[in-house]
Length: 116
Image (cartoon, rainbow, N blue to C red; front, side, top):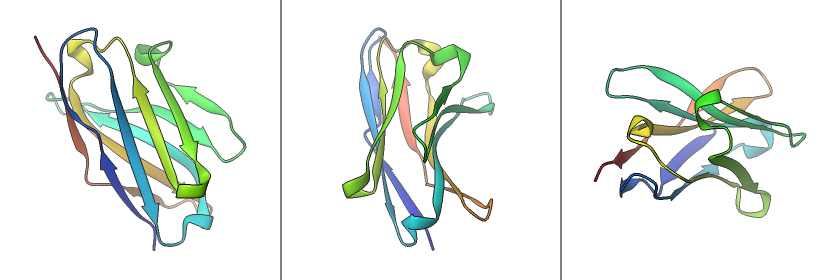
């Protein structure tokens, strides 16, 4: 059973950067795509970035050019580098995985606060 744990959230000023990490364990060979989601204080949930097993990346329009998703296969980890953060990026960020049987798994979330 795949389990995901996020880390790296925190408080950052507008224009600053953060790097989120996701560590996967248990059945990682079944992962087809690696995701980052976020849920805003208004409870809006969106897919921020996706990295498929073939290397294809997709991003939400709101983060294109500022966020980068990447992975370290050897350590079963993937990352979200977030640059030029804006107040509207403030949210709980979740890493997720799409499994080959189409199930979705998500971590517990990490808070990102963007404020001066």
